[in-house]
Image (cartoon, rainbow, N blue to C red; front, side, top):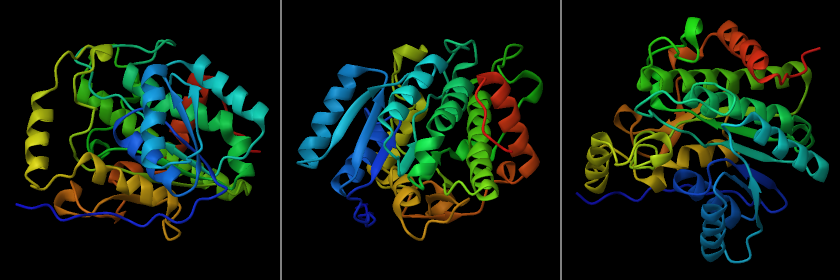
Amino acid sequence: MPRRSIDINVPDLTGRRALVTGASDGIGLGLATRLAAAGAEVLLPVRNPHKGRAAVDRISQAAPGAEVSLHALDLSSLASVAALGDTLREEGRPIHILINNAGVMTPPDRQTTTDGFELQFGTNHLGHFALVAHLLPLLRAGQARVTSQISVAANRGGINWQDLNWERSYDGMKAYSQSKIAFGLFGLELDRLSRAHDWGITSNLSHPGIAPTNLLAARPEVGRDTETGGRKLIGALSRRGILLGTAETAALPALYAATAPEARPGGLYGPSGLGHLGGPPAEQQLYSRLRGAEDARRVRRVSEELTKVSFPTG
């Protein structure tokens, strides 16, 4: 069946500085391109400089005259996160939009980050947690909106508090769900902290629904040499316009959450179609696993201990 065209209007972002993680391909590249086309200066922190340069070329082709800069960032290394924070704080320029989009999903075998954390927990949550902490002065200066990309997987499973790094019994999907639940709780805790301490930052959440993105494609760096069977099925359904979104429409909830004047602090934005798998972006009810303020505080405290990076609360 023909797919109905879905898009949103993005306000003029001239004079705004935006940072998007995971913007060398997929949803992140789509987000960076739309922000640049709306006039924002876009920072692309990337792990692979070759892919980063190709992304800059694609953004420049789609948005001639766009102001885009590359920076080195490996979210699986806290030293790399700290180095980017040092660089940007030395520049001293406010950041107005931060989209925490990068992620890794379901390595077939347990892997760890440079710092010894389970790869998904360490990259999807702890790396972004540390990044926000390092950038906090710039986010405050820019009265920033921070949008953190979670997943429908945050609506199942839970946090394995007794074994956060899955050392005893690794389950890739459960570990992925945990990383996104923890990340979502932190995104909401960040908004609470900002309101309590008058930081001027607003923080909300988004999820892309389900679409044929690169998360389940062949990723040799995480031990997956071919795309998964699930990825093939998702691609087939997406091409036929059945339930699921496309890589382009999957970017719209985060784009809306990060730029729409009406997007609410502390809100969750995702596709509004059946099962929230595809369709136009809209606010959705918070997943049950994200509603506990005490869980969010616990996530922050544990993350501060693990990363040795803290948020001022006094």
